[in-house]
Length: 404
Ligand SMILES: *[C@@H]1O[C@H](CO)[C@@H](O)[C@H](O)[C@H]1NC(C)=O
Image (cartoon, rainbow, N blue to C red; front, side):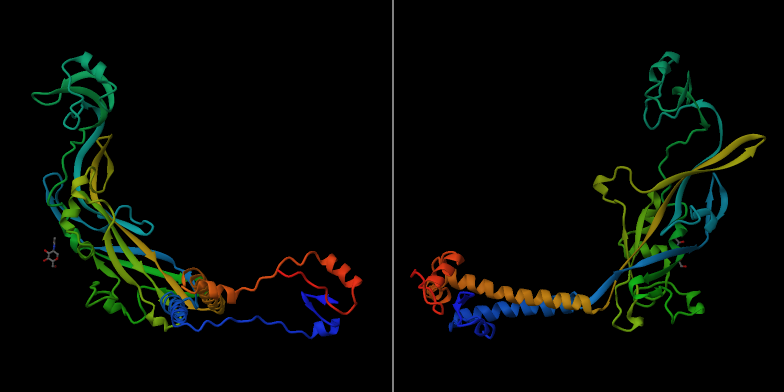
């Protein structure tokens, strides 16, 4: 009777067979060195990169956060339009609250006392609305913006433009004042309160650290070397840390990013989990491609003037600060550990395949190695032919297999 290609006297003998693979040992310095080198590389990858650098033994979670801000500071301006004027938080933070960001007004053009009437279109910007008589305005009606009345009226002593129905007087389209009106915004401070959570590890923390007391908080200002834990930032410092000049940026406005990074290793003490702050400018300030620079918004204050609805139009330039919180926490967990060990062992197995390939393809003695490594047999035919052979010959002996 035959089983598994070997001949057994009986089923019992077959049952007590133990099969193991035969190993070919190549005693060669070069192959041995190659093998050890590959193994060392794989081990270095597993230990150095996967375990130490990437902390492959840890389960990870990404941060969930909430941010609130509070700006403080007072500015004083003295202009012909507004006279002597104090600006406090309610004036320059627009809108009063936003999600993960805040806007601080730094500069403005004001068009006071507008009412809804008819007036000559401003031609300075486009030059499109300049006319000589009424028929010009009938032709210009699609080119000249605004709701046209069709009349051509005096804009200045020398110029005539088409008349429009609008909030008059119209905004002049002047450049923003330089230096900026609210230059003192540089000295405003903002308290950024940030609470984070790693839900998978049930870990909560906030950027007002446990050792910070209220008397310290009332007078500290963030400084990377002397006060790195203070969550109060001077706006001028934010700009200068990002490599920007606040006053230049304040003229046309812009967008600044405040990045709070919470990378935590929760296998370590909780107090090691600390936020790090970095700042950078987010909008384009490239002087070569500076079409439509900065950031501005328009808003109006409405009032009744002798029963007639009037407004003061403000084109406000300012800096929007975006607070971005990101981070990852890791903590030991058996599942990723086993997964990484498994992947590492599989990689070690790959070393054999690579060495085999090199030995059998590139080595000078590859023919001999290949002869030693592989034993070849021919086609033994189909199993039922053996069965027939067996039944035809003596019951306990093997069939004569064909030579290769
Ligand atoms: C900001 O404050 C400093 C010191 O208090 C002062 O010297 C400086 O003039 C202020 N900057 C502006 C633009 O007001």
